[in-house]
Length: 287
Image (tube, rainbow, N blue to C red; front, top):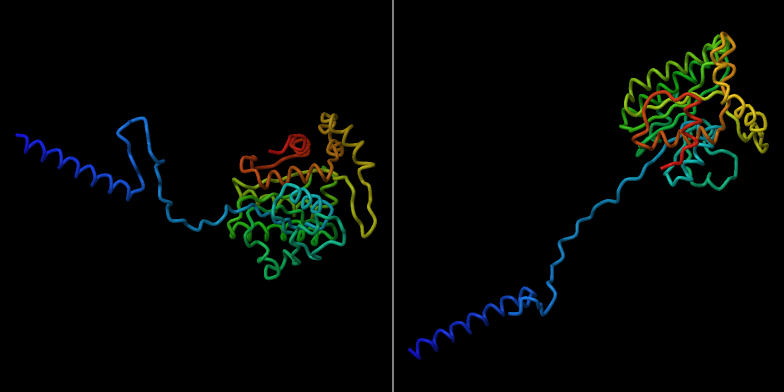
């Protein structure tokens, strides 16, 4: 009996030693005291995987060296976005610091071979392209050029497209028929190609500091007082014939703020934003 008991004790001792050696190889030591751990549990590191950093928003501003376009580029740079611009003349002559943080492309929307590379890596587009001249020229620059851009952006898989259009001024539309018909054609194309990510801004007179060569024109001297008065005179817009002339002006800074938000905020509602909507959105704090 004594011999049998001795063998059992030796067997248990041997088994405990074996378990201790195996546990030590795994880097883990356990105590018989349930509230005590001799060494912290060690977890071997998993194999690392090279994961690319999350993609950043890249905004392409069409007509980015113009009056409204330059304000949009500045706003986007200030918000930390990667910003590129495409225009017929490329980099502007102004020397503000934000200019150095924009990628400047030169090309024409009427010639696809000269600018489609500018869309590489772009997640959103804002178009400020437009102009005045003969009726046929106005339709081409306000309509055809923007329609080309909308089509190319859609094919490239761009998520959002914001188009700076224009408010309806009633009788003025007939005098600038090519201008407004071109704008309407571009709007129709945008709402078709970007049903869920297309935003149309329709400002009236846009005021602010405008660079003409080395001269800065303070258009806000006239525009700001008119904006303050006319934004509270909305009923006057209902007057026959002359009503649209009471559309309040809006600053280029406000247009830029709303345009950049519309281009980068996935919950910004698609569709048309009139001048009162621009004023309202511009007063909201950016998220």
